[in-house]
Length: 116
Image (cartoon, rainbow, N blue to C red; front, side, top):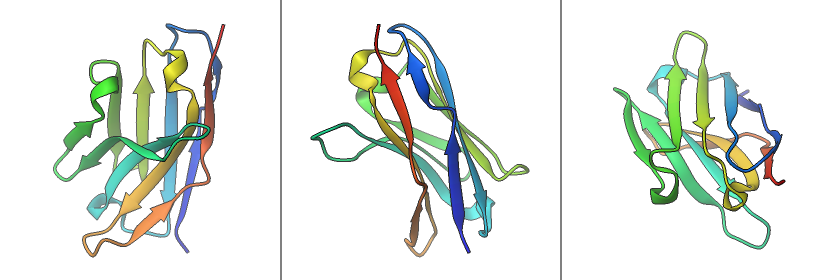
């Protein structure tokens, strides 16, 4: 059974930082493209960042230069370092894994709230 478990969300002030983690189990982690999505209230889910083999990274334009995605295949984990957060980054953040046959798995999400 595949499980993706996110952690690291919370409340942070504008300009602050958070690091999200996603621990995967039940899959051959190193062959999956790992991504972070987010969904703000009243908005559609959007792709924030993705990392594939061999560590090719892509980012949503609005987070380029502020967010960094990384993975540790030995720990079956993917991370999202988020810096210079703004209120526009407030959303539920989801971890996603996609196989080479386009099978997708989702985590349960972690809330990130940026507010003063």
